[in-house]
Length: 204
Length: 273
Image 1 (cartoon, chains in turn purple, red):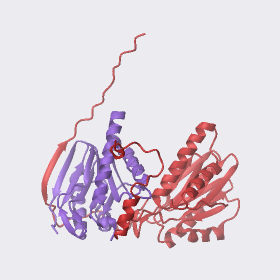
Image 2 (tube, one colour):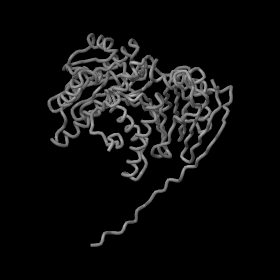
Image 3 (tube, chains in turn purple, blue):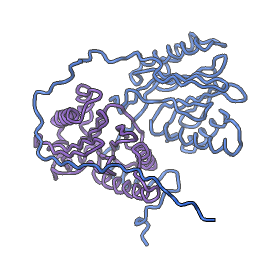
Image 4 (cartoon, one colour):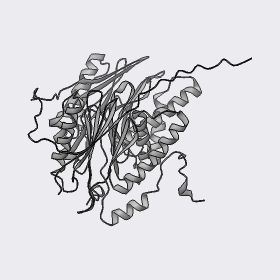
């Protein structure tokens, strides 16, 4: 069994017109036993930057705490929030530092950059950045997620349509994966507001 | 005072803190993750005015294509570029690191960087890690001593060649080069040959695919032709898009309005004499 399949996860981030959506499943398991159905995988770094961490839950929490620490230091020194591109480089450097004994995490970073341009990015567990212009996926359900997103994605979607697309892609993919599911947690971020939604999915 | 309480900024280099824990997990049967590789076809050739580098744009994670349009031609210096194959994180990190070192060296010496400098920095680093930093590179550039093309293997050995290929598609690309290469190619002939070699890799090797990137470096000038050729466009695109039969059920919605971003214009007092 792979270490990534110990806890199970599904993460997706998608770009729309001056907005982005980031979504995750809600299950936390220990191999095949479910121990929580409200686990939070997506964290807010600052108002316009969200980080999702898939993979081993303990490493995800440790990595998140490290990154929050580095971001707070940055805020104290620079007196402003980190840009998404800078944050992605920071995460990549922290993961590559552990090249020969890595954190078993795959982060998904989504944020609004300068001029409200959406930015999404994912990395493998040693920090190889993948900057996509349409969508990024991570987790045990990633193969289904790739397929669902390829079919359902359209460029320049508004926030409503983007929410619908992301939710349908997430729920249809986790329905085919035993290790993730039990609902969905979606954030849709536009320049004026952040909408957080909990989805009803199959509870199996 | 506990060392673990303070997360000091690292002094640089690799940290092996988690190795023991990862070994323990592996012994319990939980195997480690597969890293993103750049299956790849990368090529370089020397033509009459300089160097041309070419690469495909597919990144794979096991058998899945995770990036259909990644950049494999990395910037090292204004006159030096490097294509990378192998583990994606390793190629990116090692080329970024040597690029920074070359920049510092340019500040120290006030001169244009030489390709041989980049070569020595890369091979020293790779040999130091005995092949565990899995980066196979094709390094090319034009400096004051002329055009140069080198290949660097993950264990640190290098070759200096008039034309070179690396990656899983290297045999397919080398077949094109061996049959059609000649000395003193013109710019257009060179680009044509590089494109043919990369296409040969794209269509015959499963680890390479998508588009062709080309970079032409001549004395005092460089041209990075990103997505020079797109031989694999998406077919059968439905303009109507996707219609969903089932509606999404939402259990809870929370809307947080974001604060207006305020520009603070400093009206500072002039310093008193």
